[in-house]
Image (cartoon, rainbow, N blue to C red; front, side, top):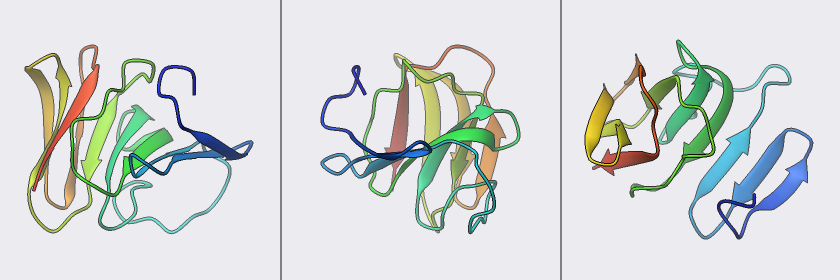
Length: 114
């Protein structure tokens, strides 16, 4: 919440950044899932491999900074485009539409292309 201002803490497991279309969800139980825990239409990063663990998600494309979040996998649950887990402009993993990819290396931003 300190690194990305404008966030709203909803409860012990959920926070949102309305201006960015971004949400954080930590594991707590069963939810609607398609790719791992990524909701249809979103791009998500997880702190675990295989689209597992705590999750940051976006409903809109962009290039958000995620340096305070340990990214171990990225999911693209959109019908088109791709999402890249990157350090600067170096791509560590690419998730194409309807898939996820494990990430090996430090990530500080996510590039989403429609």
